[in-house]
Length: 72
Image 1 (cartoon, rainbow, N blue to C red):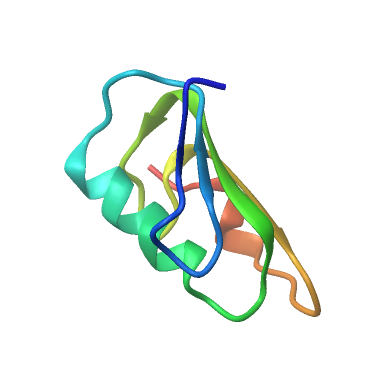
Image 2 (tube, rainbow, N blue to C red; image 1 turned 120 degrees about the vertical axis):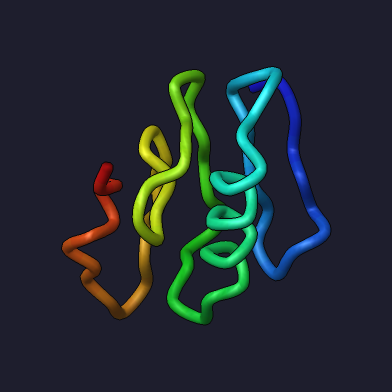
């Protein structure tokens, strides 16, 4: 892991150095949702998708989100 952003309700764990602003905004949004479990993770290939960053990982508590695989 290269960095942790802990300014949101749940931390965002990054496994990359540089990141698109849109993907980071999506990760921040997910980190503040009530169903997000523990943290949001972004892998080295992370880039902006539709609501969920491609290369992002999200575990949920009490919810199933089919789109949470990232859609490009």
